[in-house]
Structure formats: C-alpha cells, structure tokens
Image 1 (cartoon, protein in one colour):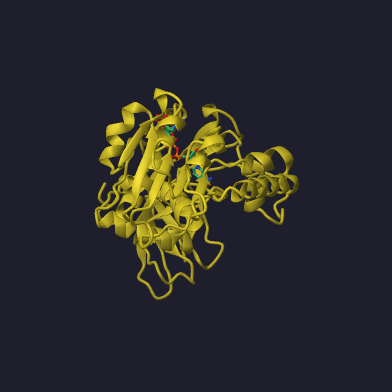
Image 2 (image 1 turned 90 degrees about the vertical axis):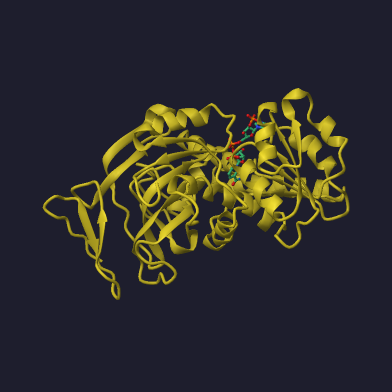
Length: 392
Ligand SMILES: NC(=O)c1ccc[n+]([C@@H]2O[C@H](COP(=O)([O-])OP(=O)(O)OC[C@H]3O[C@@H](n4cnc5c(N)ncnc54)[C@H](OP(=O)(O)O)[C@@H]3O)[C@@H](O)[C@H]2O)c1
C-alpha cells in the first residue's frame, strides 16, 4: 500500500491489490504520525500527554488491519495500567523474545475499546474490506484506541452493530469479551443451556455487570445482582430479576436466604470468596467465576517466572479446596475474539442488548474521563469520541 500526502496534507490514499484506491481524511499533514494521548511513564493523571506526533501504526503481519478510530471506550483497567499495573506481564507479551532490549513500552497508548472503520487490510485479511464499520476489544498488550488509528489482528475485530452509533458501540467490546470469557468460556454458559439457570452477579452496576445482565436475560437465565441502592431501578430496567443492596448491611445474609445458584460471577473480589461459594448448589457442576484475580499483581511483585508459579499454586489450591465441597472455583480472564463479538452484534441488532454509556467525553477531555473513572461507582461505560464519523 502507498500513502500520499496532498498539498493540503489532509488526504491519505492507500492502494490494496484488487481494490479501488481509497481516500481517508487524516488530521496530520504527515502520515507517519497521528494525534494520540500517550503516557511516557507510569503514574497519576499528570502522566497523560496529548501529542500530534505519535507513531502511525503499521501492519506487521498479513492478518492485521488498521482501524481509524471514531470512538474509544475506557475501562478500570486503563486507570490501573496508567499506574503501572501488570507492567511485567504486558511487557513480556509485547516483546516476548526481548528483541528490542530497550525495556521500554513507552510511549504507551491506553483505551481498550474501539469503534471505527477499516482503513487498510493486510494481504491475508479476507473477512474485512477497507471502509467496513467495525468494533473491537483491544488486548492490554497492544497500543490502545486513544489515538486516531490503531492496528489489530483481523481475528480480534468484528463488524459493528448497524443499530448503534460509534460512541454507543465503543461502550461494549471490552466488557463483552470479559463477560463472554468468564460466562461462556470459563463458566460453560451458552444461549442453549441458560434457561432457568440461577445466576448471581456480584457488582452488577458497572460495565461488565450491565452487559452480563442483558446477555444472560436474553439467554433465559434468572439473574440476581448486588449493587448499591441507587442502582436498583437501573438494573431492574436492564432485566435483573432480583436486586440486593450491598450497602444495607452484610450482603451475604440476604443472599443466603435465597435459593442456591448455578453460577456466580464475581466483579467485586476482596472477601467475597469467603462466603460466596456457599451460595452455590453443591454437587451439581455449579461454578464460581471471579474476575478479580491476583495474576498481574503476582507477576509485578515477583517477576514473570515466580509470579506465574505463585499464581498457578494459588488457583490450584483454591480449586481443589472447593472441589471437595462439590463446587468449582475458576478465574475469568479477558480474551479478545472477533467471532464472539459477531454473536454479541447479533444480540445488539436484535434489541436484546443495549449499550450503557455513563458519560461521553471529547478527545481533548481524556484526563477528565480518567478522573471520572477513578471516582468509581460506575453506572456503565465511559466513552471518548475521537473523531466524527458514521452515524455520530
Ligand atoms: N480478569 C479480567 O480479565 C478482567 C477484565 C475486565 C475487568 N475485570 C475486573 O472486573 C471488575 C468489573 O469490571 P467493570 O468494568 O464492570 O468495573 P466498573 O465499571 O468499575 O464496575 C464495578 C462496579 O462494582 C460496584 N461495586 C463496588 N463494590 C461493590 C460491592 N462490594 N458489592 C457490589 N457491587 C460493588 C460498583 O458500583 P457501586 O456504585 O454500586 O458501588 C461499580 O459499579 C473489576 O474489578 C475489574 O477490574 C477483570
């Protein structure tokens, strides 16, 4: 492919064999750089830096695509990554053979959801064409979406739901792929086996919880959630059958009085493991899946090898301890998947899942978006509009 900068410096054309020449609007005069929010060191909000000179992403593998970002979604992970959480493991994933040897992942672009259009496809990409409207969840070891362009593997990308604008679409992929990994891949749930299953979601009012409620209701499950009292009506509106206020006292008491559950999704962590597994139906294949795991903390603290050993020992011990009581203990970990996002798109376009956008910020307001995220008590997702396009 070939990039051409016009006299005005605002047009880029790329030629892909077998396709027409295409034109894309870029804001930079030079197509080797692009605007982005980056960090050059780990720390608090002060480390966020806007630059017009971030490196333009390049296709390194034939299965990759470059996406022009219209909207980016933020997640609690972006806030913790800004502070250096997971740096050891993520650096190893970025450069497994330590080829660069600089030890530097900076400048690092955050932002784990993207909605936009395909700008360029690698030679092996058959499923997408330039200008396709797409959405994706970006793995934490890749450069993020708080930039004008991002490069991703074609396997991670999916056609965006037609019924959503880009800012709405950017609220879904990362929480959807986290919930999918926990509930489907780890929890064994599917649209065919959920009918009448009793599911408990601890922490229902954030990004993962609001998505999970809707998907499980679409699949016919009975869903109980915990949240603070002011989120009750909101979660009932999303379909939750039973809502328990965790701020009203020890939440395990009202939950223990209920019929036991087939699966618990834990978004809260902390001391929930002490009591939550007692709420499962024993000897029935019931599972507790927690998204709050010490995996990245262990590798940050102990290094990759010892951290992974410690992690394996911890999860094996806990799994065994609970197995003898007749319930399964599992960790849920985010996994990107274009095919899974295709299924989510169908549910969205069928009106079964709607985006829950708590607040939308402009590209210049990224520090304010992070400040809002740090306050916690999310009621859905924080989205940043990067550029105007599509239905926005
Ligand atoms: N393992 C992985 O790969 C992975 C990937 C993504 C996310 N995660 C983790 O999954 C969790 C959920 O992510 P998210 O994006 O949904 O976070 P989020 O949007 O920040 O939502 C968390 C929600 O939990 C609620 N909450 C806090 N303490 C609670 C308690 N004791 N009982 C019930 N609810 C409580 C908060 O609402 P209130 O206002 O009601 O307190 C908040 O809305 C986070 O811990 C995140 O770190 C893990």
